[in-house]
Image (cartoon, rainbow, N blue to C red; front, side, top):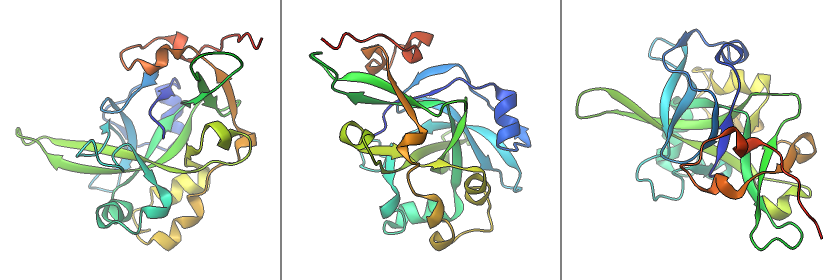
Amino acid sequence: MIERFSLTGEIGDMVEMFQVSKVVRGYTNRFNVSPTQNVSIVMNDRFGKRTMQESRWGLFPFWAKDSVNADHTTLSQKPFLDRMLRKQRCVLPCSGFFGRKQIGQERDPRAMHVVLPNQPVFGVAAIYDSWKDARGQEVRAFTIITAASSGAMSVWQPRVPVILDEEGIEDWLDPKLTEFAGLRKHLEAMDTYLMRAYPVTNAVHDEWFESPDCIREIRIDYA
């Protein structure tokens, strides 16, 4: 399960990468994002304009299995997920995500930060729900789409976010695509050899800890 991620890219770079027409709320310098916190997503507004908006990570009810992560193989099988898949897809700007790995003689699993080398920001497939709050304001909540990992990483990180390539981003945000068959090809896990995982402080497990130290590589004594 993916329970933490980072976002350190510049707003301007994200606007260019995701071809955003309008920035309503843009977040950056987030080193330890955890569920229930608000971040930026890229979505289409009601006019079909690609917009960077604010959204809560975690659907309601929060305790539900698909609230924070949704398995790509179940999207078309569950009516509430299928509804969002058809009409409420979004892309989550991300710089890295966190996992846990047992290293050497350490008592506790070590936090690992997983990134794409030379790519400060990438797009993760997500779906969102929206409604009006008591004040009549529109609010949103999203879940990340995940897939089974492969290779050596699968031993300690069984699932990874679905990372979209350029074509995948365009199709995922295309409102004319509403059938799962047209999106399925983009929902495979990226080959893990394209990723780099490195150890970081276990303080990232504390949702209130927000610091550049969260993504700073540390040296491990393997003795």
